[in-house]
Length: 77
Length: 202
Image 1 (cartoon, rainbow over the protein chains, first blue to last red):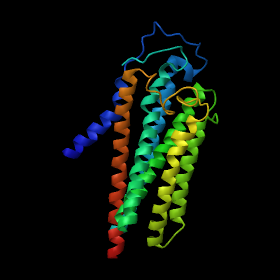
Image 2 (image 1 turned 180 degrees about the horizontal axis):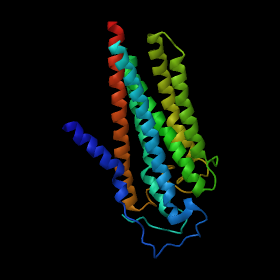
Image 3 (image 1 turned 180 degrees about the vertical axis):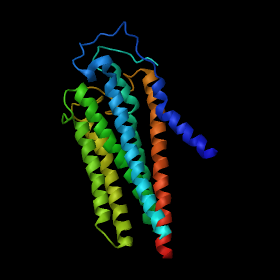
């Protein structure tokens, strides 16, 4: 239970920024968006950055999973 | 929270402060923990300390690489190209290469005792280079990052120019991502302990 609470807190800390509200559109002075990544106030740049971090950490954990699997196999045989 | 919009250059991408910046804080924290364990190893010769040192250095390197990639993506849409030869970018790249060499050095030695000792000593030297490349050198020239010559302050972020809400959410992000990294690191450390125990019993 204690572990669950810790994990929950970490998740909240990592992703709390999702609830950060969008900018009021009225007072934005922008250059015209030229492509997808520049549209909507370059928000997709942030999406890409967050996706890269999550993918990277996911791969790192996957690597750990492989190590555990190796150990499990050795224990069986 | 609303992010302030100054002149339409950063726009919403300033929110990367919550993702890109914590990677670097995490990296510095992990490398600091790693060097503490390296010093502990040298004074105690306890292989458990080497286990902690290497896994924290590994997570630190992963965070550093993620920070570099996310920085390159951001720079591509903000500064026009993924790599601008900015002093901060070059400094961070050098720091990561120094730590990659740490793993190459470790892997090159088969004698465990020697491996632990040499890598602990190298760890201290790598850490000694970390802060000059990240904190000192980027301050001495002009930089695209905040700080640098001409604009006083921290070369990574500029607390005086940031809205308070951006800064406080950034610190929450730093805490969250760093704790996640610590968790993954301790999982790896625990697995190493089990593997070693098994090898010793076999």
